[in-house]
Image (cartoon, rainbow, N blue to C red):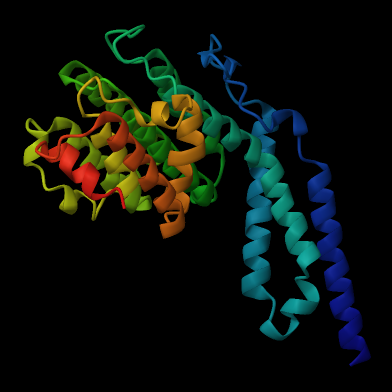
Length: 321
């Protein structure tokens, strides 16, 4: 028994030493993408930077940490797991992975937020679409092709999945806030949706299955945008697929031009309303949080004196309480 304890202690110490050494050789100068000259303007560097030797080494280190964690789980007998695979060992290996990739994904998430909360509907657009959205899509294509490909197959799946979910939620929430939203604006939203879909495909060619819920919401939103007669749609059926707050926000902004927008009623900028109200509702759609949102619809109805004979207004009014 004494010998067994010594072996376990030696194994634990060796693994911890290995993990600590692995952490020390991470190249901290190669943990970000640096594709943008300025993240606030989403201006891409020319030429777009390729991965450095440090990025390639970090990707290998990430793979080593990934395989070590898997091996510890699969190889160490269950009776010795708690003694050898301590929280400190797991924490160190996971910290190595976090240091290597977190900044890259954080940059892309911030870029998505910047791109989508600045949708250029009707102004400053090129023939291809909104410049911010196009720049973001180009960055995703570059990163997916040259940076993420350095990592082993499936190793970044949880991070890429989370990023794709963030992209879909942020874009759809931003698009739902556009007002006025007539035929021309809807055509431009459709154009931007294609750029977003290109970005998602560049990050994960199978995103339709990886993020099934968000992908289905994306498809339904496109159907909503393309509908020739909005009042003929079955809103209750749409609400079984789309988050109700997203559907109601879009419908509220289809009402006549003299009806104020939801951010205006809330006395907030569209950007603030997006980040403080719409995006949190994707994560927490509890009745308490939804009730606060529904009260905002009630304030909109009272301020604009909505006409219940309009099918869109009638549905919005039916969801106020």
